[in-house]
Length: 157
Image (cartoon, rainbow, N blue to C red):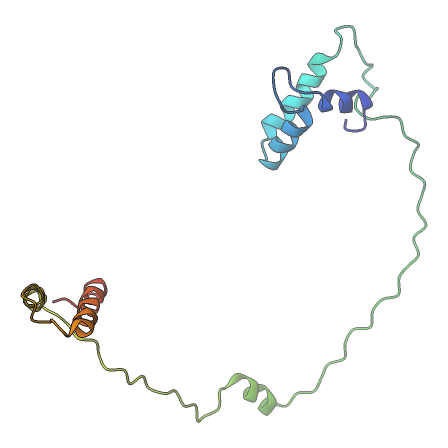
């Protein structure tokens, strides 16, 4: 059907009252894998043909007459030579599979993070309100940031 020039002209027309061509809408339906939408374009085209258009049963409306394809001469291609098996010793295979016996994994030595109680947090903010941390703002800010992180990490008990 796509080779029929009348169909191509019809598909490139704008949809009545729309801003897209039928071809654009057809391609959109095709991309969305909307089979009913795609079929609708073919049936609308057939419905747009004159009522007196009556092709014979053997006439294909959608395909232009094209000459029959000519036979193609096929020349056999040489077959690739299969690779030869390689001799591998079991020790070579195991050395590629097993890790060396002396693998060193360094232990993490970071100290555990502190936990806080609600009373500790309440006491800290009470001291901060009384300006007991005056002159030690950097230390107070670090403690406050750790308390906030502790709440997010589940370290408040």
